[in-house]
Length: 261
Ligand code: IPE
Ligand code: IPE
Ligand code: MG
Image 1: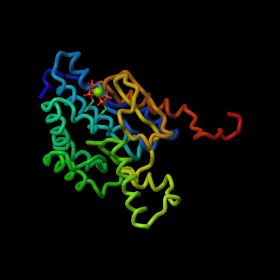
Image 2 (image 1 turned 60 degrees about the horizontal axis):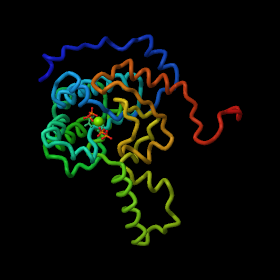
Image 3 (image 1 turned 120 degrees about the vertical axis):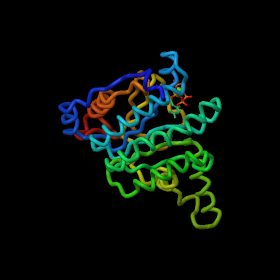
Image 4 (image 1 turned 135 degrees about the horizontal axis):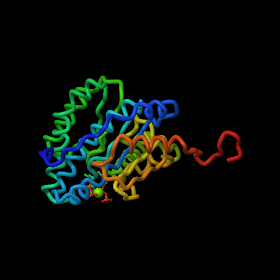
C-alpha cells in the first residue's frame, strides 16, 4: 500500500561473501528482535504502520538468506505479550500482517522448503490471525529446510511460568518429587522444546535489551546489536552479524581447546 512512496531495491546478496561464510560454522539458530519499524516510518513522516509494512519485506529477504546460509532455525520476534498496550489501530494492523505476509509469500516458502512454526499464546490472537498462521504451519509441516519460527504474542516470563506450573501439577500428583526436577524439565516445558537454543541473537534499532524474549534459552547465546532499523536491515547486515559470530570464542564457562584462553 505504501509501495509507491517507497521505491527501494536491494542488490542480490554478494555470492563471494556468501561462500566465504559457508566455509565456517554458521549459527544453527538465529533469533532476531525486529525493532525500529515505528521510528523508520516517523523519520519519513509516515504513519507507524508504514514501518511495519516495510519490515515485512525485510522478513522475506532475511528468511531467504538464512535459508541459503543453511541456518536451521530463524526465530523472529513479531509481537510481544506487552505489545497489546499499543493503540488499537496499531495492534489491529499488526494482527493483519501475518495474513498479508503469508498471502504473498506462502507459495514461496513452500517452494523453498521452509517450515513455518509459531511460539506464543495462540488463544488471544484474533481468529483471522490464528487461522492464517495455522494454514501456513499446516501447509509447510513436511518441509525439511529452514524452520521459520514466529514469536507471536510471545512473552518469556509467561512461558517459564507455564512450564513451572506444569511441573507443579506433576509434583502434586506424585509423578515427580521436587528433587527430581532438572534443568531439562524446564527446557522441555518451553515452547522451544524441539528447537536448538539460539546461537546468535540480533536486535536492531539501537535498543540493547531483551524485552521479555527467550530469557531461559539465551543463557549462552552470542548477542549482536545494530543501530540499523528493521526495515533497513539488509542481507549485508545479516552477513555482518554472522561473520562477527564466526570470529567469537564460545567458552560456556570453560576454557578453549588449548586450555590457555
Ligand atoms: C518493532 O518495531 C515491531 C514490533 C514491536 C511489533 P516497533 O514498532 O517497536 O518500532 P519502534 O521501536 O517504535 O521504532
Ligand atoms: C520488542 O520490541 C518486541 C518485538 C520486536 C516484537 P518493543 O519495541 O516492543 O520493545 P521495547 O518496548 O522497546 O522494550
Ligand atoms: Mg520498538
